[in-house]
Image 1: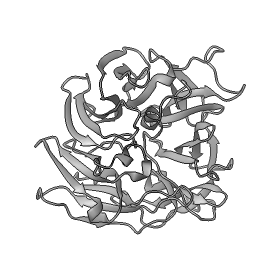
Image 2 (image 1 turned 180 degrees about the vertical axis):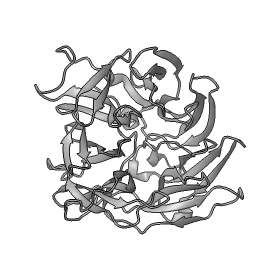
Image 3 (image 1 turned 120 degrees about the vertical axis):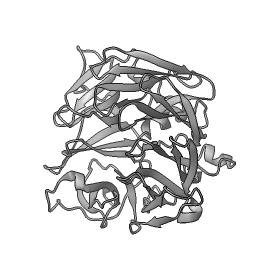
Image 4 (image 1 turned 30 degrees about the vertical axis):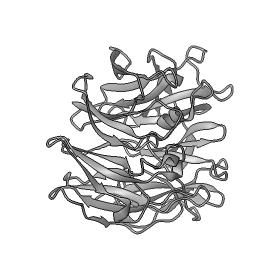
Length: 406
C-alpha cells in the first residue's frame, strides 16, 4: 500500500488492516424493507457467487446481531470474485447516513461508500487509490480521514493541478476533499485518528522498514503540528491509536519493525500531550485488532496472541491463535478473559464493551476461508469479580460465509 511500490508486507498490514476485517456469505440480494435508524444495525459483507454483497442485521443490547444478516445491495464491479479480494473494514458515519467499506483487490485499495437512505454504493473519493482511516466527529457527521495513495486516471482530484497529497478529509456525500499537510508524503503515513470531540488528530509516520516511526499531534485543520515522540528499535512502529472516552489519554500499539509481519506487539498508553508513556501488555501484532476502551475509561480490552512459540504465525495470517485480554488501569492488572479453550475457536477477536463496562463482547471463529468466508459467533465475557478464569457465553448463533463486519 505504500508508494515505494510498495513497502514490505509488515507496513502494509499495519495500515491496510487497521480497522480489521475478514470474508463473506452466499445469499441473494434484495433492497432493504425498512428505513429505520442505521445505528440500530450491524453491517456485514457476505460472500455471494456473483461477488461481495452488503448486508445488515438488527443490533441487540450488547452489539450482537439478533437475526442473520439480510442482504442489501451487491458491491458490484466484480468485487469478491477473486479469492484475493478482501474487505478490510466497515465503519458507519456518526450521522448514520453512510457506511465506509474499505476494500483491497489486485490493483489496490479503494473505499466503497454505501448511502443508507438511498441504498446505493459508489467510490468515495472517486478515481483514487487509498484507504479509509476514521470518521471525523462533529461537523456534518459524514466527513472522514483518508490516506490517498495514487491517482487512477485523469478524473482523479488534484490539489492545485498537482498530486502531492498528505492527509485528506473527505465528504462522504460529495467526495470533495480538503488536503492537510502532515509534513511528509502520504505514503509515509501509518495511522491518523481524531479526538472524540474532533478538535485534534494524532498520527504517525515512517520512512520505511527499519526506520522506526514518529508520532505527532495537530489541530484538525492541520495547524499547531507538534512532534510527540520518535521510536526506534524492534518494537517501534506506532499506530492503532485509540482515544479514551474523555479525550485525555491515548492507547496505541508499538508493532515490530521487522520483515516478519505478525510478531507480537506492545500495548501502550500516553496522555494527549505524549507524556506519561507506559507499556501495559503484550498484544497480537500486525493483524489490525484495535485496543478498545471501556466506557468508564478504566479498562482496555485487546487481542492477545496465545501461540507466540509457533513461528509459522509470525508470517502466516491463518496460523494465528489468539484470545482476549483486559488491562485494568486502576489496579494495573492484566487478565486473559477469553481463550480458544473456552470458545473452541482459534480466533477470539474484535473486543468491544457493554454499556456498564462490566462485560467484553467479542467474536470467535476459525480461520477464514478466502473462497467461502468465515463463521463468526458473538460471545460475552464477564470482567468484574474474581481474577480467576472468566466464564464466557455465546450471545448469537454462528453465521456462515461472512467476509467482514462493522
